[in-house]
Length: 335
Image (cartoon, rainbow, N blue to C red; front, top):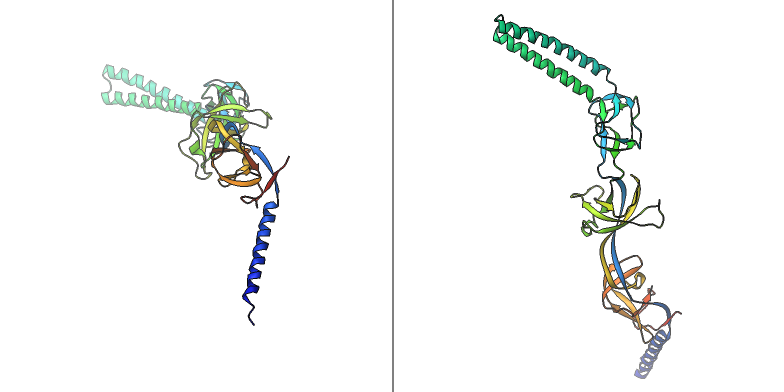
């Protein structure tokens, strides 16, 4: 049997009253929030990197020949000058070859002298004289080659500097592919940093940077970008950037550093706590109600976010708004 129309009308009225009551209860319920005022301050965009200190002109010391090491004449930390012997390789065989070449040169020169004299006296032909001269020239060149090869068994410093690393001991085998030592000048250093390829477009030569190390807790070292490598490493998906300290500080070669390159800076930016911003909006409080306001973000940091438009300095925003906060919901401010 069908229910009368009056019954359904009463049901609809009750549902509407219940819904209105729910809305009233929702609006009457207050959520506690914390406010912070937008302020004027500097906004800094940073590019993070890690790096290490090295000499501006690092030189790898390597052997041109394969031979056992006889003596190592320097140790790490020694200051050396260009041309100074660093490492002596075993040269017994080469010394014998040089002596043989010298003996052959002397014999060839004696033959040359006799033949030239006989040619002048008419006893030998011009062809014989020319052959003797050529043989003497070849013997002199062979001796020079043997002497140069012997000299290569003395590994010398190519620059004035300091031995920053030594990786060879007497008795070990030196080869052309093995780095035996590193030379550099600790007074002329640079910092080589690795930048993620996603950030390299924001880095420019001349930009300032701040460096830090666990060796100096709480201390920052000012620097500037001096060089960008023209190509990156596709394996590491990174680029190399070089920096120079701008303060008179002595940094040990090889020490690692954390680096923040300042790629952009706004001195008078409108700033709010980073937790107050989310997905293109902030929450403000008007007449005891939370109101969602669209804003345009700028430079973002760990603690603060720049607001380019949509909010004025001095206006209060809700810090860390609840995830279920709704537009128009009544709130009370925590003291």
